[in-house]
Image (cartoon, rainbow, N blue to C red; front, top):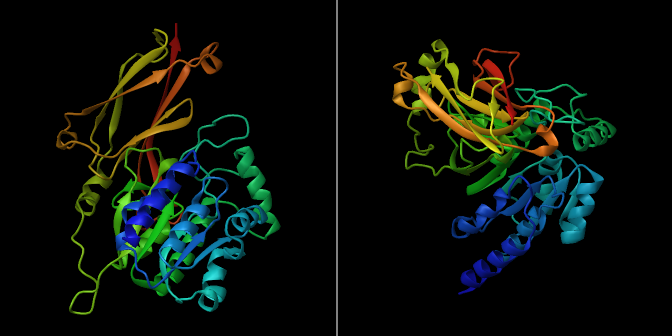
Length: 378
């Protein structure tokens, strides 16, 4: 009865709390309440900036009889958390808090749920004036959105460097500590993390997931669609049950692993079928059709940008791809008077795949090919 009332209250909370632009993956916990361990604390590394995660997790942990900690290195994040839950707020680096203060503050000394969404990730196309196309997501300091430019200054004041490699390193270090503090079936949620093929991930949790999954200690239980834009990405993992032999339950080889060698030898080709490049299209929408040949399932990703903003991704390919038959990809672009009154719509296609394991200069992804087309609305 008590659990039913808890679920009802949480559902009401989820409806009332504001939703962020990039979604609210932490709300998935509403579907997992009965599976959450009751002998651990909730930890949020990266207090919310208005999307509601701190309030949601504080309420959920309270209903379940757990304690909750929201940690942020910035004054803004710390003040936001203090307004929500007062003593739950802590201003320091996430990995530092987990190592030094959490064991003394937690009622349990263990973590049952961790939401790792800190150390900002710089997305492709972030630029002060416009969406200037850059891919992969490692971009130079001057190609920052106004918000990320502000955050870079805040990072520098703390002696930190804002770039994607540092973001992954921070999440990896935090994941390692959470791994040591985990309850038997603890759950870790990474925001701003997305699939890139080969059974691998990029974004904030890219390096951490390689550590957790390749160590065969965790399994993915939920994740964003592989076709969703990278900035809507999230991955949720749970600690694997220990088998009777005393080790983690074995994980079968993925299809992506089996396709790895053939993917390295394959060079996918993209052809624009309609409309023709620089051709005129009728207002106020146009269907774009391209054909992909030679893409390998769960390995090659086609990333589509419209006016330099990532629109969608495609990683699932038919068997005909390997036989050279090709597969058509269709989507629509729409007229925007503010953008297209005096200039064409720009559509960019990038074919990407995971970096080779031996690569030292590649963070996650390498671009195999890219092409850009422009269409004029009439």
